[in-house]
Image 1 (cartoon, rainbow, N blue to C red):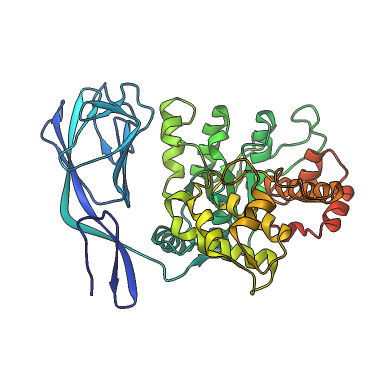
Image 2 (image 1 turned 180 degrees about the vertical axis):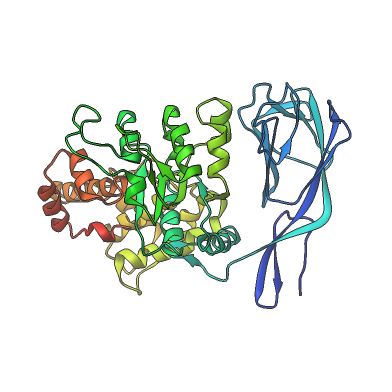
Length: 450
């Protein structure tokens, strides 16, 4: 039998074998400004308000920024957040960066005032019955709602923009969307916009012909041609240089590219996935990201929640990671150790949790890992958890501590280069074969790091 609680914004509704998330619709009423009297019904979990095209609520007023504020449905309530607006956002006359709205709250955006009115009508979002989407793991309602959306989106050929903090698994989600798509048998080409130098980016994307510039000694295929028939994943798309954004937009819209040094166009057939940890509406407002490209990328916008917003997943993930690294189903985390994990805010998100579990799985030999042994082995004196692995080694030999640090460096190096050994070797300033020897020494297989 379904049930609904007015005291919670999000609730789980059970209907036979199906589960859904339920939240209330609401309306925004303009009470001051040129559109006074206008009412906007909102039946989605995220709405952006501003004077620019593409906002879910468009307000034509010079004092309202193109992307002024957003309201997101959370388990704690309706959260309003300013998007770097010029004139600011206020709630009940107080300037805010973000705040929770109460019924009847007055929202100021420039010289426009809106009132927030929750309604009794509800929206239901289906939850996936699965606790995983490929390598992505989660039992929380937020992740199962995300899995349901990802399962639906994967089979379509639409562009997907994945947003979320560092360490939430944006690259992994993009890989799984590709793996579950109709293009799964074709290439997935990753373009890391944060690591490719700006002067090489155009050639990386579109390729070049011999003699196009100094050093172009032969023709080179770019990412679009390499991915023809498959998928391109633009990691950290918010770092793409502004001067290249119009060319990328043209390639996405026309499905044609022009290699550097030629006037000849080449037809391509690619699906686009993109990810960023930047707030792109704020980047648009600041003039660092093109609005038209943002809208083109955001056909489907999937936000990966940080781990602190889904604490019910921490114990589940910790057990899965411990089994992965220990390969021993008898090993477990004691209740006091699990409580310690669940109290931490995890600024590095699932990646940080994974690194901590990997570290303690190697440094603690006991079958049941308790709080005391976990703290002594790897957590040291930097508070609840360090983001690195440089503490808690005073009880090791120098050789052992050196080996542990070396292995952690190699693991991090590979992750940063998406397990491309050649690229990782260049950053480490060692020969590729030397890196392979170090990986063998520590029994690390580049294809099995994640």
